[in-house]
Length: 275
Image 1 (cartoon, rainbow, N blue to C red):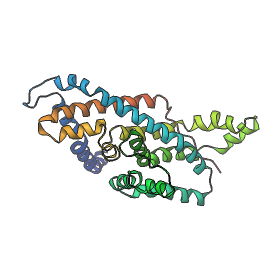
Image 2: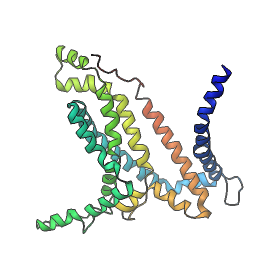
Image 3: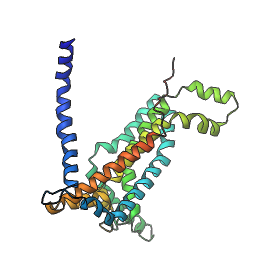
Image 4: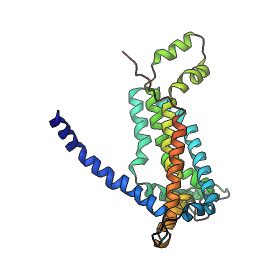
């Protein structure tokens, strides 16, 4: 028994060291800087002073919620369509969905700038068609579009996985009991895919609320999100403490949102079809 425990500890030790060095230690540093002054003394001024950034917090949450909703609104029908396709079609759709993810986030964002910029590909087409150009880069709509474009697969994949595991006999039973397609969707498929929906919302909302590069490039510097504020604070040594305080509040908000969303999921997974 002792040999098994020692062997298990040896196998787990690299993971434990990694967790301590790159998860626990950074969190402790963030907490330390959040409650200390630049001179090293304990203070609550960093936390109490965050009221100055209330508008930035509000804008970041608002845009993240909108982007997450758009991802769900477009992603759920796509995930359902993929789950009901043939095996060959599923592979093709999966490749098309994941293909942009093989490219670095920075390159994808720059490509969006090349398409949406005032002198970009989209406006070139509009001018060629004798239509007025549109100003997109530098607006909140451009940032939301960039967030949706970059994090869209994170919404589709968990929903697709959950719908794929729904027992088709449940759908057949609903049809036999007189349910039409809309009732089957609302009363059977949607409730059974709730775990995938919660997972998709979490995987999109969490990174989008803290993003900074997308807002910098597609926002054109016309407004600032919370991720931009944190980056700016950490670029100056004298404001490390404020940046740490904002990061700590962000972590608490994310944990709170995760707790709220988990309440809407019973944690049960649907069983695959038995053949």
